[in-house]
Image (cartoon, rainbow, N blue to C red):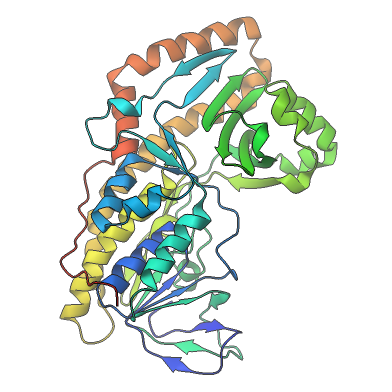
Length: 412
């Protein structure tokens, strides 16, 4: 899809508009970029396929690096006013023994914690802040396409930004290969009542399986159960009672609250890097450019870092070009971000390989062997320099990214 191709909706009268930038996708990357552009006087339209921001998301954790970026944008106090939990020492229980394998409070930065929060309130915050500027427009229930159809709205812009996730329609329309890697595991998510999870963030590893937990305030909680790739249809066929019995062997409380497959959704773990992130009039960011795996909770941080870097490059390119933004300038985004993204994805893939081996083999490991070995690993591994370097890279990013505020305007 180029900047001259069609962005359409079934909710508006026929019209042709000409914003500088159309951002497709209202996740963290798209909303942050739209806010930064609007605050800098750039005519920006943010499109979202769903009718509102209240759909379910799977990324709840925001690393300390994101807090620093929020402060640079001038919105950190507003973010911290939203319902959230501060995470400093997420707990992992390994064969009935608990370990603080990560201690964010030891980081040599002002923000020595991460945030656990639901995404919709955060996204609404950025949309509301962007709406304080005349050059911003938010269009929910709007679908992007490059096919000729009987549509009621056509937008032409100097730049289309694809921030529409791992199944990006913008990327597909542009004919860009997502470059996905194969994975042998998938993550089965459970939506649960809040009292099913007794702590904000934790994981549990037992011979019968691996669970991740996310307590999300007064109403909801989530849990993730690792399964072998392609086995979910068979799991459904065996029935919810069989799944509940397997989960109960790891955590009986979670199992009691798991009553129906309506509570379940499957997240495919297929990280990757698109073959290119920019073309004339086109820029991809976040999962549209590089699909993150759940390992290390990197999806939100990568997308927001992308947005900050893309914003600065876009503003500069808009000043230098009179028409469609050329790849000659947009390509700076990929050259700046790709090395850091590749480093993070490499670390994720390393952790994923451990999961890919353990999940299909766990039934063949005797508990009297697996338990002591796993506990020894979690005793020793957190003390190694390589492990600390890995989680510090996840928490702080491979390199600091400044927020360019030179073009910021005050709200009207």
